[in-house]
Length: 207
Image (cartoon, rainbow, N blue to C red; front, side, top):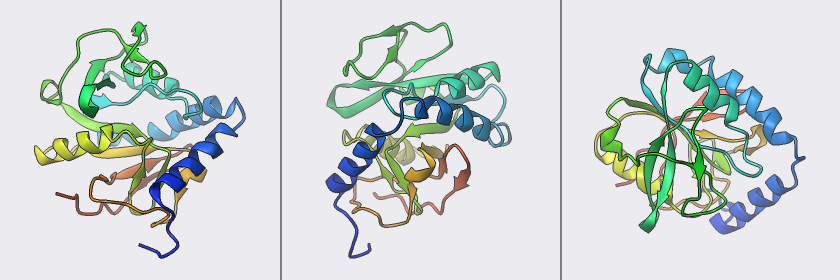
């Protein structure tokens, strides 16, 4: 790790600040470009009718609405995460007609419907996951809850090889070692920004 790497908390606070300062239209503009970029890759990466895990964006996150709509229109089985107690994730199927209900965190939208475990999703072939930033070695800066790191650790320990793709703005794809990482951090296989999909040299996953 570079000597100048910021602490994780310092880096997270800085990326949060930068997002708060984005223009209100930035999320929607980025979301349209994200969807266009994603669909240059996803049809070649994911089998028809496979399950794709994505998420419902909130606040200044890049808008995932166009991406979700495109996945559904393309015939994919779309699931989004549900935050459970003890920092665990379950999943719920999403369609454009899905109703949203209050979840564990009121600011995080969740669809109504049965909650599914990863064992209920045998055809899961791709995970599109939120991040505040991703570095060039695939280390992901999350929001601090550890939900996705715990999920990816267990998911990979089960032998699942579906790639995880961090979704960020262009300026949030940063140089390697921009913050301190630890043994809980799970790297992603690729990063999706409004202008590019970049496959990354996945670090060995921590045990």
